[in-house]
Image (cartoon, rainbow over all chains, first blue to last red; front, side, top):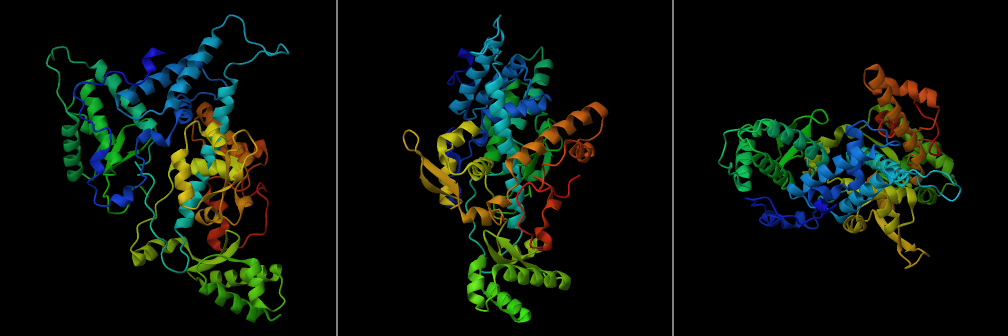
Length: 276
Length: 238
């Protein structure tokens, strides 16, 4: 469990701005009041588990705990490497998964006072099913909200409220992280043999390149943006650059099909949302 | 009671209002002895007339009252006039938290956090600030934690007549089960889950009235004032 304790040594060459002060120069400070853009804050450990369950087409009532624990910890590691802010709840869930996994390995099953066998996963499954219902209900509310906002009442226009979240597009952070893992696996497989010097890529540089690219093309594939990086470090920093522009609301991320390449779209901060 | 005159008065009153007017208020204003059912009927007749005349608006029952709203197809034109962008929508965290409050109210913060599995302090603040929820009292449990409930602003924001306008959580659960079965069948037989959902719904029996994401299930667009129907009445599925 030591590996998942936060605050490990940071990746070299990091120039990321963890305080998010880089948006302080935005011309409309009020619109940013109370804004929370640490990406994973929208989601939580239950959401990550549901994402993995859906991705691997797992029966929620019969979760292969060893597999899901490994996937969960892998995602957590990667999210930490990306400097995404991980709430303590993610670690609590990691501990829960490891505990369930060890209970499953016990030679004799745990029984309740009536001698009935207790599935160590039962509590987790119950929570996932309960959470999934409200996630679905939230989707229903989102549809109703969209429907209502297209119909206008009499009287003056309702005041525009500051957004409490910058839409990052039609993907979740977990979709992005899952895709990144695929890319990293490919990079590892194609590791150059003769390359000795570390590719030095700074986050600022990748942000600048991404901005320049967005100025040129209204949309392009993330894999395109990765064409000129060869190392794991380069891929990670490029991905952080994407997260930063999503965070600043300069770009949107769209996935045509789940678990596929990511389409990056320009988004004008003052203009219409393009994800509508 | 002169029906024509009643319709005209109702039209005039609602025309002047910029928010929902309660049925009881309309009854008072009319002063003609007409009861709530007659007023509701007259509003239905007005809506029928608007629809057959092809008007761009209708009277919507919303948040426990009645209000003129434009039809959704004129959204862009209206926003060009008002020079506003699409209004800020709630975040996913906000929607999930609201969903839990709406179905479990009154509910405490620890109860909500138990379901969502994350800290919701910030989200609660935003929802309170926007008037979508309120503190409705204190629980009798240890520490007497505060209880949260939704407000009329919540109903207005989502275009709901009242809380029972929401599909029941059992319906949502049943719809999820169907989706899952449809996914399994689609994987086994090939094809898209959608191809099988209707048939599976027929096999699993009723349970979904309003449809969670099906826009067709919403007859608000036509402006038809629906009869009071408890959530869960079988709708157009199956």
